[in-house]
Length: 138
Image 1 (spheres, rainbow, N blue to C red):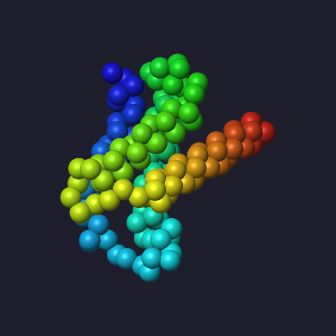
Image 2 (cartoon, one colour):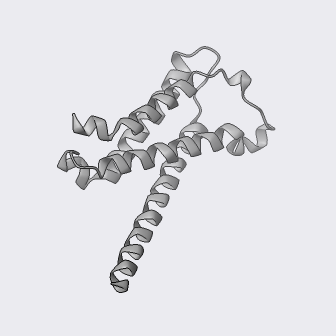
């Protein structure tokens, strides 16, 4: 139960991702097709999955996380993120009317995970630096 409480923000953000998946593509802004990779929705995919990845990692660092998950938190964060990314594309292709799956969306989701991982690594490095600096002051 503690694990679910610790992961509640990641779970809620994942639910938010699925809600966004249901927005009809016709309401999203379009740019010329030759710059498909830089459509506004690709930036949104990147941001949403970066936040999701960060929330997953941070929730896996809390007490009550199963030891297997805590030891392999980056692997499990990528695994869960890629499952959610694939599921959203599947839903857009086969369930949600007026939506289609896109490999570019999936790539943007994956890129967002790497951005989230980079942010986590920078934070972790900064936390270590602050801890060392505080030790020197005493």
